Length: 245
Image (cartoon, rainbow, N blue to C red; front, side, top):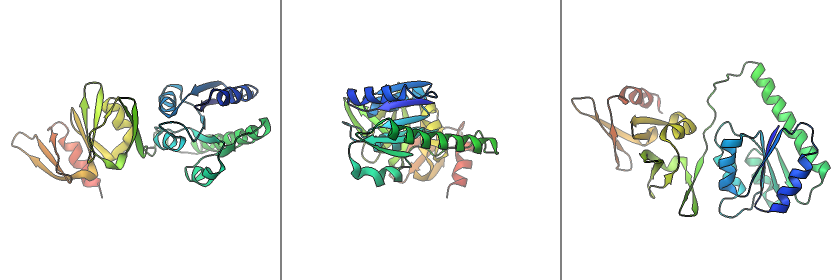
């Protein structure tokens, strides 16, 4: 089992690492000091479970949980505040570990994690499709000039490459996410479709399609934006639009 500890307080991380080191099936332990670092570590470290603090500066635990890319790890919230318990289980947390806790309480949480992991493994062996599409994140975290903001995926109208970034075009602005367009489309799933080598569009945002004699054209969005459409991507886009409710 690979475990990622996310807590802005060093003593809390040290305690969890010490207790986890006594568990025989813990193969690797990673640490993150805040929510932004947690998302970076989730991609690089690929944890099976995240022990996640709730109250952290800038990006809290609930925003981290909602922004984890698929396949998302299991979540155990670890916090000193009991008032978030209902919201934690609404976020599909495996357990809610209230500080201060001891080894026995942590072991009980890990037992629940192991049971869920075994259940997932059993489902795979009984015919679940390895390539099945997993739910995309509901929101993305974007950090610009030291400020991190939450961007709801449903608010994104279209995407545009900008050097090493992707501009997320929304009604409220165009924040830049450090990500390739191809990688972001893999994360967001079929609700977004590439329409140009430098652009992609949320299918639900498309109001009309205008095509010229050469097969290129533009997409007119409900918000008024015009997005380039190249003939290379037009057939797949039209097919996807035909499947969109």
